Image 1 (tube, helix red, strand yellow):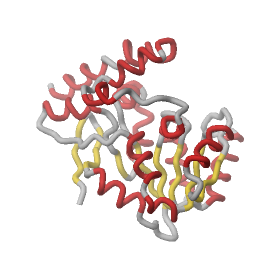
Image 2: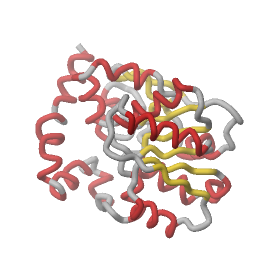
Image 3: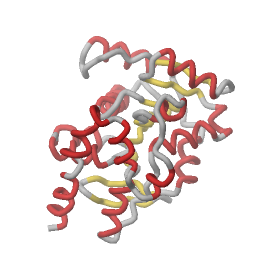
Length: 241
């Protein structure tokens, strides 16, 4: 059974990668909807700045650590968070033969990215749900919720960025019409189809994947990694105190 570890105001679900795959690839019940969020440093910082997002995370069925930095901070306090990056999880799920028997909804990517995904996994039962630029509560948001519910997927990959994808998952759960399991997957599909490159193994092993991303996309990511990201240490020290 997985453990639950409380750290930085979040209840992390800690399990081995094989346990996560077994749980997420098991045929879901005919009714009911669950969702997985993948907290990283940016999420924790944003949650501290926007407390109204806390209920969205609280409603999640599982919180799986996505960050090697959070994992290291946890270890400094004697806690094991069991980091399993979301991009690795989605890759492993899609490459597992069991996923070929599931109906999978993919919410967010454009038609070209979805085409690349289908080419990579031609034997999978994949369903695209387009998600145009939208705000929570907007008519576009409602239409996308309805389109996702109509698929009745076993597994749903939400690829519409933080925190929209988490809010979207919460809304699906609250409405009670969707079924199966959703993963707040971020850019995982882009990594899987080669639209974005993962950091080389040396960066991942040394917990400096953030540095690779910053150097690759400085214009887009400088604020996240140089201004917002370091606040995680103040949050950590405040909780420790």
